[in-house]
Amino acid sequence: MDDQQLWHLGLSRLKALYSGFTRETELGFAVLLTRYCQTKEALAEVIAEIDASSVCHQCGGQCCLNGKYRINVFDSLALFARKSIPSVNFIQRPVCPYGSQDGCSMEAGLRPADCILFICDAINEKLSPQSRMILASGEQDLRECIEQASRLTGVRLRTPLLLWAEEQKSINPKV
Ligand code: SF4
Image 1 (cartoon, rainbow, N blue to C red):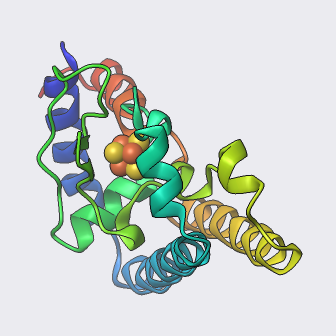
Image 2 (cartoon, rainbow, N blue to C red; image 1 turned 135 degrees about the vertical axis):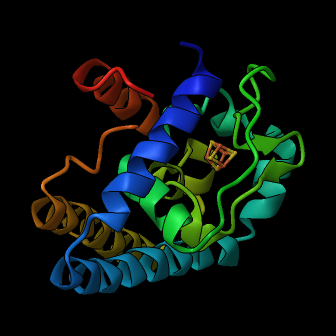
Protein backbone atom coordinates (compact mmCIF):
# COMPACT_ATOMS: atom_id res chain seq x y z
CA MET A 1 0.00 0.00 0.00
CA ASP A 2 1.52 3.37 -0.97
CA ASP A 3 1.29 6.66 0.96
CA GLN A 4 -1.69 7.89 -1.02
CA GLN A 5 -3.63 4.72 -0.23
CA LEU A 6 -2.60 4.89 3.42
CA TRP A 7 -3.80 8.50 3.56
CA HIS A 8 -7.22 7.51 2.24
CA LEU A 9 -7.40 4.48 4.50
CA GLY A 10 -6.49 6.67 7.50
CA LEU A 11 -9.20 9.19 6.60
CA SER A 12 -11.84 6.53 6.15
CA ARG A 13 -10.97 4.93 9.51
CA LEU A 14 -11.03 8.39 11.10
CA LYS A 15 -14.50 8.95 9.71
CA ALA A 16 -15.66 5.71 11.33
CA LEU A 17 -13.97 6.65 14.60
CA TYR A 18 -15.49 10.14 14.62
CA SER A 19 -19.00 9.00 13.80
CA GLY A 20 -18.77 6.37 16.55
CA PHE A 21 -18.19 8.94 19.32
CA THR A 22 -20.84 9.03 22.02
CA ARG A 23 -22.56 12.39 22.53
CA GLU A 24 -20.49 12.94 25.68
CA THR A 25 -17.21 12.17 23.89
CA GLU A 26 -18.22 14.38 20.99
CA LEU A 27 -18.85 17.36 23.27
CA GLY A 28 -15.62 16.93 25.24
CA PHE A 29 -13.70 16.40 22.03
CA ALA A 30 -15.11 19.58 20.47
CA VAL A 31 -13.93 21.65 23.45
CA LEU A 32 -10.41 20.21 23.22
CA LEU A 33 -10.35 20.66 19.46
CA THR A 34 -11.26 24.35 19.74
CA ARG A 35 -8.54 24.86 22.36
CA TYR A 36 -6.02 22.98 20.23
CA CYS A 37 -6.71 25.05 17.09
CA GLN A 38 -6.87 28.39 18.92
CA THR A 39 -3.56 27.70 20.66
CA LYS A 40 -1.91 26.93 17.32
CA GLU A 41 -3.27 30.19 15.88
CA ALA A 42 -1.90 32.13 18.86
CA LEU A 43 1.54 30.49 18.51
CA ALA A 44 1.64 31.23 14.79
CA GLU A 45 0.86 34.89 15.54
CA VAL A 46 3.82 35.11 17.93
CA ILE A 47 6.10 33.84 15.18
CA ALA A 48 4.51 36.12 12.55
CA GLU A 49 5.11 39.14 14.76
CA ILE A 50 8.88 38.68 14.57
CA ASP A 51 8.76 38.90 10.76
CA ALA A 52 9.21 35.17 10.25
CA SER A 53 8.02 35.44 6.67
CA SER A 54 11.24 37.17 5.59
CA VAL A 55 13.33 34.53 7.42
CA CYS A 56 11.33 31.73 5.78
CA HIS A 57 11.58 33.43 2.39
CA GLN A 58 15.37 33.59 2.62
CA CYS A 59 15.64 29.97 3.77
CA GLY A 60 13.18 28.66 1.20
CA GLY A 61 11.20 26.65 3.78
CA GLN A 62 13.72 23.88 4.50
CA CYS A 63 11.69 22.80 7.55
CA CYS A 64 8.77 22.01 5.25
CA LEU A 65 10.63 19.35 3.29
CA ASN A 66 9.82 15.68 3.86
CA GLY A 67 6.86 16.47 6.10
CA LYS A 68 4.70 13.43 5.42
CA TYR A 69 4.65 12.20 9.04
CA ARG A 70 3.90 15.62 10.51
CA ILE A 71 0.11 15.22 10.54
CA ASN A 72 -0.89 13.20 13.57
CA VAL A 73 -4.28 11.60 14.22
CA PHE A 74 -5.53 14.54 16.30
CA ASP A 75 -4.48 17.02 13.58
CA SER A 76 -6.33 14.86 11.08
CA LEU A 77 -9.46 14.73 13.22
CA ALA A 78 -9.36 18.54 13.40
CA LEU A 79 -9.16 18.73 9.61
CA PHE A 80 -11.99 16.23 9.35
CA ALA A 81 -14.21 18.01 11.90
CA ARG A 82 -13.67 21.37 10.17
CA LYS A 83 -14.23 19.84 6.72
CA SER A 84 -10.82 21.14 5.62
CA ILE A 85 -9.01 18.07 4.34
CA PRO A 86 -6.15 19.36 2.16
CA SER A 87 -5.38 17.94 -1.25
CA VAL A 88 -2.18 15.93 -0.96
CA ASN A 89 0.64 14.98 -3.28
CA PHE A 90 2.98 12.26 -2.06
CA ILE A 91 4.97 12.26 -5.29
CA GLN A 92 6.39 15.79 -5.05
CA ARG A 93 9.35 14.74 -2.84
CA PRO A 94 11.11 16.35 -1.05
CA VAL A 95 8.39 19.05 -0.91
CA CYS A 96 5.88 18.27 1.84
CA PRO A 97 2.81 16.42 0.49
CA TYR A 98 0.52 18.85 2.33
CA GLY A 99 1.95 21.97 0.71
CA SER A 100 3.74 23.26 -2.36
CA GLN A 101 6.70 25.44 -3.26
CA ASP A 102 4.45 28.36 -2.21
CA GLY A 103 3.97 27.08 1.33
CA CYS A 104 1.56 25.11 3.48
CA SER A 105 -1.98 24.50 2.22
CA MET A 106 -3.42 24.61 5.75
CA GLU A 107 -4.27 27.68 7.78
CA ALA A 108 -2.34 28.05 11.04
CA GLY A 109 -5.04 26.68 13.34
CA LEU A 110 -5.27 23.45 11.34
CA ARG A 111 -1.58 22.98 10.62
CA PRO A 112 0.13 20.03 12.35
CA ALA A 113 1.22 20.81 15.91
CA ASP A 114 4.75 19.61 15.09
CA CYS A 115 5.01 22.26 12.35
CA ILE A 116 3.67 25.02 14.58
CA LEU A 117 6.06 24.07 17.38
CA PHE A 118 9.18 23.76 15.25
CA ILE A 119 11.53 26.72 15.79
CA CYS A 120 14.59 26.88 13.56
CA ASP A 121 17.85 28.56 14.64
CA ALA A 122 17.18 31.71 12.57
CA ILE A 123 13.74 32.23 14.17
CA ASN A 124 15.07 31.28 17.58
CA GLU A 125 17.61 34.11 17.45
CA LYS A 126 14.83 36.65 16.96
CA LEU A 127 12.62 35.56 19.86
CA SER A 128 12.26 37.81 22.88
CA PRO A 129 12.14 36.30 26.40
CA GLN A 130 8.41 37.06 26.47
CA SER A 131 7.81 35.28 23.14
CA ARG A 132 9.69 32.25 24.44
CA MET A 133 7.46 32.12 27.51
CA ILE A 134 4.31 32.29 25.37
CA LEU A 135 5.64 29.57 23.06
CA ALA A 136 6.60 27.30 25.98
CA SER A 137 3.21 27.68 27.59
CA GLY A 138 1.44 27.11 24.24
CA GLU A 139 3.49 23.97 23.61
CA GLN A 140 2.47 22.58 26.97
CA ASP A 141 -1.15 23.41 26.21
CA LEU A 142 -1.04 21.60 22.86
CA ARG A 143 0.51 18.51 24.44
CA GLU A 144 -2.13 18.52 27.18
CA CYS A 145 -4.90 18.77 24.56
CA ILE A 146 -3.50 15.74 22.75
CA GLU A 147 -3.14 13.72 25.96
CA GLN A 148 -6.63 14.60 27.22
CA ALA A 149 -8.22 13.88 23.84
CA SER A 150 -6.34 10.55 23.68
CA ARG A 151 -7.71 9.54 27.07
CA LEU A 152 -11.21 10.65 26.04
CA THR A 153 -11.23 8.67 22.79
CA GLY A 154 -9.00 5.74 23.78
CA VAL A 155 -6.78 6.39 20.73
CA ARG A 156 -3.11 7.47 20.72
CA LEU A 157 -3.81 10.69 18.88
CA ARG A 158 -0.19 11.82 18.70
CA THR A 159 0.60 8.99 16.25
CA PRO A 160 1.30 10.21 12.69
CA LEU A 161 -1.77 9.51 10.55
CA LEU A 162 0.13 7.40 8.00
CA LEU A 163 1.59 5.16 10.73
CA TRP A 164 -1.80 4.89 12.42
CA ALA A 165 -3.31 3.85 9.08
CA GLU A 166 -0.64 1.11 8.83
CA GLU A 167 -1.66 -0.14 12.28
CA GLN A 168 -5.34 -0.02 11.32
CA LYS A 169 -4.60 -2.04 8.20
CA SER A 170 -2.95 -4.79 10.20
CA ILE A 171 -5.78 -4.82 12.79
CA ASN A 172 -8.47 -4.94 10.13
CA PRO A 173 -7.18 -5.49 6.57
CA LYS A 174 -10.63 -4.87 5.03
CA VAL A 175 -10.35 -1.39 3.43
S1 SF4 B 1 2.26 20.35 6.85
FE1 SF4 B 1 2.50 22.47 6.09
S2 SF4 B 1 3.79 23.50 7.65
FE2 SF4 B 1 3.97 21.27 7.97
S3 SF4 B 1 5.80 20.60 6.84
FE3 SF4 B 1 4.01 20.34 5.47
S4 SF4 B 1 3.86 22.28 4.29
FE4 SF4 B 1 5.19 22.66 6.08
